[in-house]
Length: 142
Ligand code: SF4
Image (cartoon, rainbow, N blue to C red; front, side, top):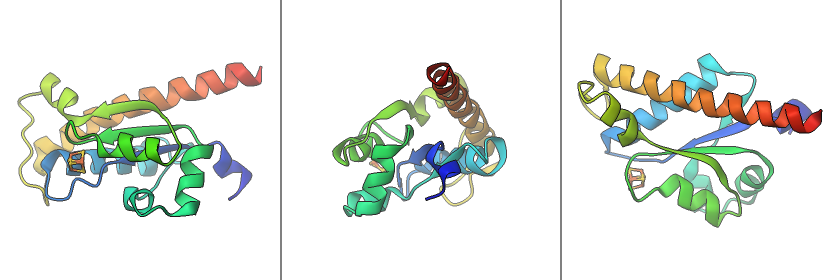
């Protein structure tokens, strides 16, 4: 792991296979990690944590983490916690949907234009959390 990687905020969405809101959470993660905050964030496959992968567990213990969950079971938050990490913020896709009820996801495999817009709104929330975490880090570094 490089020292630049040490500073990255991990964005971890639930796996949500077959769930529309799970797909929205993953799409929002890619928007943040690939487009909006590429140098400051990274992601990690939740399945590695559920399988007990030591390297993945170490990463969540050593980085600030933001989890995104597709339903109240909160698999991302729960698994980060059981791996010994802590979500600095946990975002529920349904909260963003409640703010934009017109944005109905088309299908699990193809979110459609409204679903992608919903993911974009969620990504903005994630970025706000990333920036807040970075500001805190900067303050702590003096
Ligand atoms: S939080 Fe809900 S949607 Fe996401 S993986 Fe768990 S059960 Fe599936």
